[in-house]
Amino acid sequence: METTDGVEDVVEGAGDIIQHLETLHNNPFLFARTLANFYAVMPPQKGSLLLAYLVLPIALHAPARILLKKNSGRTTLRSFLLERDRIFGLERRVQEWREITNATVQYLTGANILAIKSDLAVTCTRDFDLEDISPIDVATSAKALGRIFAPYDVPTIYRMLGVMKL
Picture 1 (cartoon, rainbow, N blue to C red):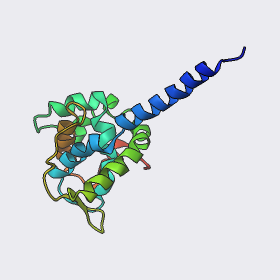
Picture 2 (picture 1 turned 135 degrees about the vertical axis):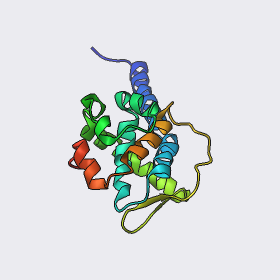
Picture 3 (picture 1 turned 60 degrees about the vertical axis):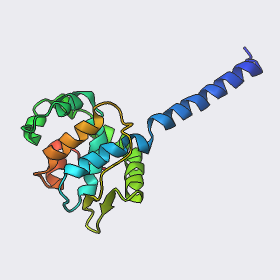
Picture 4 (picture 1 turned 180 degrees about the vertical axis):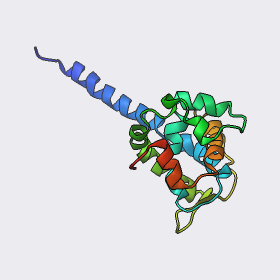
């Protein structure tokens, strides 16, 4: 059965629409406040740039975000890990969000909001003063995650979360 030119044009146009929606959805500007909030509360430490790869996969994951957004400051990394569904599939999500994390970190360093030192320690140099366009509760969850990660070094965090590779 042959398709007509009109149908082919519609199918081709649908692919463009999907590509544009993906670009809008996975935009580094959407997640800039999220990473800035995380590093605003995370003390600078050697290798803390590697923690950026955990922020979006955890803060955007609904089971983790539910706990993080209502965090009263008493949650520790150990208590966060008590329910395994919060980190289930984390390594796969880290891979999925890697590219957008790179773009977001690049944007934040270019805007002089984050500074990266030679030992990969990240500091938040100024407040993120643009309107928050990130998904609801994600930026707040990232700040809570930064508080949870703060007492631990980078290798310990990765080991406790079970993430073996980036």
